[in-house]
Image 1 (tube, rainbow, N blue to C red):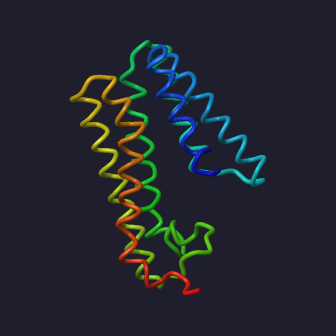
Image 2 (image 1 turned 120 degrees about the horizontal axis):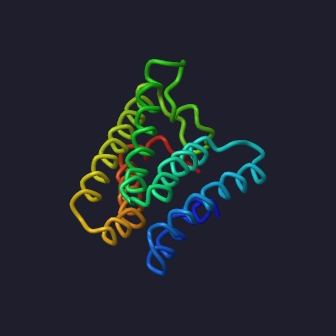
Length: 176
């Protein structure tokens, strides 16, 4: 359920782009991201900070895209979101007692501090790479290719990246 909630705005953006244009898709993206924030707030009774940050970045850059009528701004949204995530992860190494990933509520992993730090750094590097990759695709390919890559390419990259963690984190999974 959560995956569908998280992925819905990207799918709506993709569909609206191919049924209409980048401006309609951008408006739908902004609205759907704030809808996800509201649904999560009602469902979990707390603010999902990553969803809220993504919605705010989309509102600013998407708003500029619609107002100025230039798709360059919405193409920067993934880079801005990934850069914010990378910066938050990196900053957590010097601010606070635990790194950001260690602070997230979860029940699956019980990792030693040094492993949390490594995983946190690897995720920061991954998000930095995604931010740079988005700039490359947005700047070197046509808009339709960028929309496809933004919707499905980053999802596939994230899934493969998660799978790549399995061999390294397997020994820390609970043995039932």
